[in-house]
Length: 138
Image (cartoon, rainbow, N blue to C red; front, top):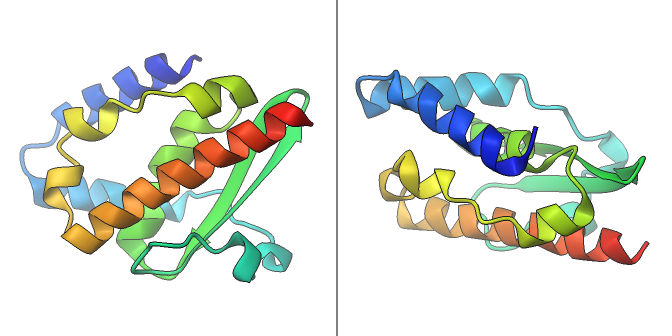
């Protein structure tokens, strides 16, 4: 599936929920299914700067595709990174680096996060795109 197809699928899923409490519950559930990062990557080097919570992100190239794993010490943040991984993992490094992540605005995620969480979301997206750029060169 392409990045845009996955984003459209997420937008449809979020449209099924009546209010933001249900959406938060769904985001928390997504965090529980997150492909967990190896303990060796839970270090300073893999910590995303600019997040209120601790978020570790690792990326590697596998058969020309970027594979992301992550973890966080906060349940909402874990769900948010799980959403981003769902969209960007298993894509080409070029597609990751150039991705326009419109689903964030369409589902209203940014406006329903605290300013510090919103900044963290921006930092997560930025780091994932940087990994895409770095893995293009490899």
